[in-house]
Image (cartoon, rainbow, N blue to C red; front, side):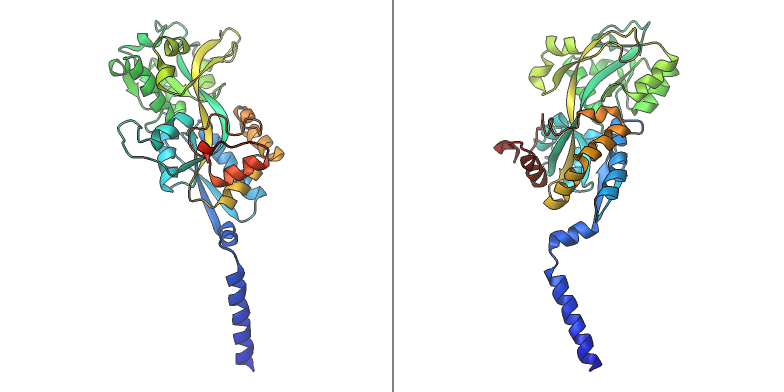
Length: 327
């Protein structure tokens, strides 16, 4: 009798497991890695905020933020599945998909876009009394351009090569916080960031040193930079880094939360429902005001690669039309 009872329980358990869908099992056990960026950077802030908020408000998932050089490294890691999610710039994502990243002909076509987070303007910082007036004046100077593998360093190389000055100055591959420290100590003459404003590292540098932003937007127009790459003209408002700071013309990339193509669609969909909820968006803005542009209205503006199927479902449910080339 006892054997029959045990056999019956085993059968019930087997049937129950058989009726459990793969998606339900995936949701129950899913562990996600989110690629952020260098210490002190906006990528890192978002990844950490996401890692805290999502598990608290979505069942069946654990999220950990992982260190990264930045956008280019995230494109590669997300495409391969080493990271399930990551923050990537639109230009880097498109170049990676086409096998056009610097010194790398591999095609990173496993990355899918989820949603627009914020615009990331290029900001070239010098001392207020510096003799550097334009990007062309960087010849012979020491310039921090971001961590190796970051979107910042990739954008810097694209821009300065386009202006034919990259090989004529000394690039220093430093993250934003390290660059600000080196700048204050006089170890570098300028530093470049590609991030939302106001940027904490620039503010940190400006506390001890009077600074000035270089207009790179005019050079971008005059040298045909926009014809070569899909960056967007933008102006940093006057007073962003102090009342005396005038407005500054520059260009920006679009920052996206991306996912590996093989992440289950229901996982992506539910993460997006959590993050793009009213409370989710408020939590991200509380982490950093830069994320105010992460809205249902901005959706996937500027997407350069196809959306994940889970993202397509989410945006269509929110009244957005996803064009065929992004599906």
